[in-house]
Length: 391
Image (cartoon, rainbow, N blue to C red; front, side, top):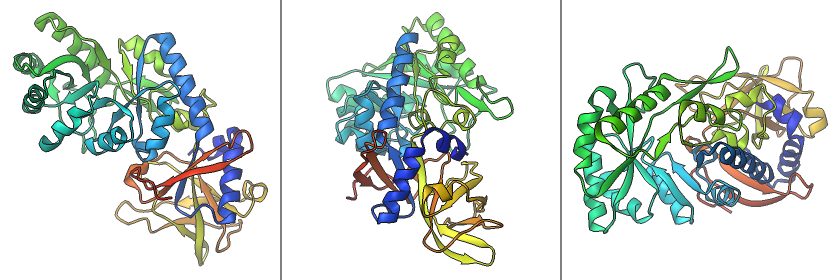
């Protein structure tokens, strides 16, 4: 999906990855992250957000909830993290990364609430009165009051399978009134997901019905319960290019994830402020009939990947482009499949992809490299897909 744009805008990343793989320093089934470009992307996001008076939390699931990158992002303008689940919250907090928003998209399990509260997250998102009560009870024991966001759901909202939950708009005031009686929590805001989405036909990012639901619910809470709303959190597809949409919608907070690596869908066709900073590297395992089979483990079903470059040096590889044969969602990606056609492929060849991914659901290694942009590359660490350092 991003291969052409990465070749055009970050050739050094691809060349470096190929060279290190040929030397044996990088294994197949590895995501390569360009630290230099991630720093640049973070700085640009932070600068634009400051101009618009918007606050940002970093999302790290797509880069394998990597603590080293999270610390680098926090040092370059986006101080706190939103965590997709409580296990990511623990991983980052234990590494010293400050937590912004926990509980959205995944609620905190009952027996983990105390641990998460001890990390002092800025806000926790709740889907139910019951979860708010649990958080309140643990907060009181710790002698604190925890700020919370309410996840809201409108009648026409777009909700992904596996992410269902929240306060129905029609029940919001009744439920919020119950939560207001709890002394250990304080309602400070509202959120939903996704509030913006990329339109593949028009090649633009648009507000969703979910985003408009957030705005309506904020007004109801302020008007009917006199709640002081401090955070209107509108995540998804938050990039330098789309941050003004948050302001126009009335939001106060965004949660960039793929923008940090220049891999939102909008980056596929457009040279935006963020530079492509992530590729996937693997190797040809074997040839069978007219197809090359490459080591898998890192493919992602919603990637929309179309092609890869194959060979042993960049100059030859960029002209040796093989089409991808997609793997059925019912199959495990032990191998990826490439159609050789009129092109070339040999056992042991390096293979480079660039596509939209979620590393934390893969079986890949994550290789962090600094110094790529000043021609002095150095591997600073190799991690697994859940942020644990391997070597």
